[in-house]
Image 1 (spheres, rainbow, N blue to C red):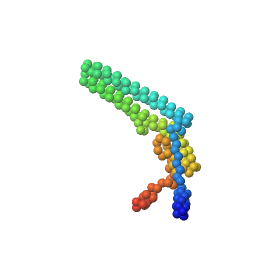
Image 2: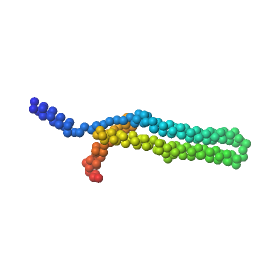
Image 3: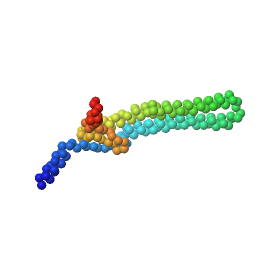
Image 4: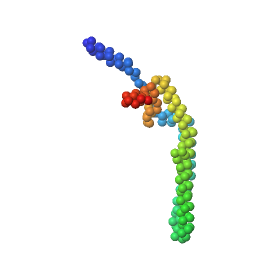
Length: 169
């Protein structure tokens, strides 16, 4: 009987001794969908994207038209005229590709506009998540769809792992 009570007390004391780490999750897609400024920014980006896409498609249609005309007329053209038309078609196609890269490339206008319009809203959401995590003493907050949003640095054990491996910081 004494052993059972001692074991029970030991287990209970271990439970109280180990601080329970608390976790939470956030559905950022849901949060962002319900922020009017985010929706307005998304709509603005979508409209601009459609305008740029139409501009690029118009150039590609022009390239297609030029190529069809070239195929139809090539038998009647001199060698110099054929080469000239081919170069013109190639230049027009390059123009479309450059425009596509300018608008939609990694450093393109769309990326810059997203950075200007959406990033401040996302930063604001992230700041609120950090505030909630600290106020409620949460060890981590996970995004429902993408992963970790916040980790309390107190729970980072990286230095302990390095130390046990014999690598000191």
